[in-house]
Length: 370
Ligand SMILES: Nc1ncnc2c1ncn2[C@@H]1O[C@H](COP(=O)(O)OP(=O)(O)OP(=O)(O)O)[C@@H](O)[C@H]1O
Ligand SMILES: [Mg+2]
Image (cartoon, rainbow, N blue to C red; front, side, top):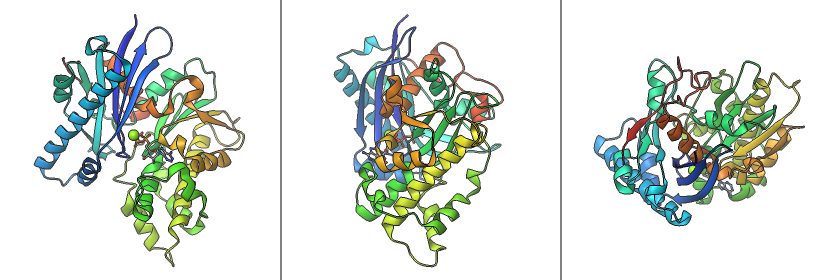
């Protein structure tokens, strides 16, 4: 039976809220409408400042402000789709991560954006808080999108992988030698965004044009690549609290001379491409394995320089976007949460233990009735 779900995603880049209306039937999911609503600068700066040491009152205020932004995104989405709330079975809301601490036994992941408030504002049943049940079952609570990536790869044949270039890069490989895997490879846009903001006063390096004019700094690249996270085997997840401006600044401070900002930007793009290529090679059984096809999603797909660098590091691979399989690359992650809400309402587990490290598959999230 055909059902419509809304997916709401706000990623680690703090760029804003993505909302999608997804139709599920017997065939592949279809994105019927999508909107992106940038966070006002005020909210972005508030969110950036929130972390483990924040006053509770600030967290509560942000929790409500994010929920209101999500509610607004649903209103805009329904208007765009010319649909009413009644046409939608449920919303799957990821929320906004403000703190992600992987690693048992003290793993924790906090998403804000009060789901009660979203259900009340929209009149639509809202499923949210997807990560904590996986953590309770011994997992890292992340990444969750690989289950959806695998669902959309059905029928694509072997050798196809999905790469999400959001704030963080994550990779899903369906036919890895030991079974499907998905994990965070390291930073994608988050470091480049913060560096661009610092030196150009822009939110991001549009099309990667700035970084394209720089030269990779080998000493810096080597230092960054030496971070143990890159060698850690999956399951693994990470966030900007680990790969943030402080991490970069510490490595820059260790260089004999302060480098030109444009060269740092080029190095960061190379770092992402290198770590993705290494992770892909390792998870497909080493460089001897036949190159396959890589479908990229997330905002990084618009960074022409990053995509070109990635192709250079993946000779023989066919590197394209999820557009090739009919899914707008900007909305894959939001669609994943529409899909996860559907799994939850159907009583099906949404996590993949091999991906998150959980002891068992569990039904994820809480249901906040309309
Ligand atoms: N035209 C463009 N040129 C270069 N980079 C772009 C462009 N458009 C978007 N981006 C990058 O994509 C980022 C947003 O990507 P996306 O929304 O996938 O990330 P996210 O919200 O952090 O998601 P995730 O949770 O997957 O990390 C922007 O912050 C920017 O770095
Ligand atoms: Mg985003």
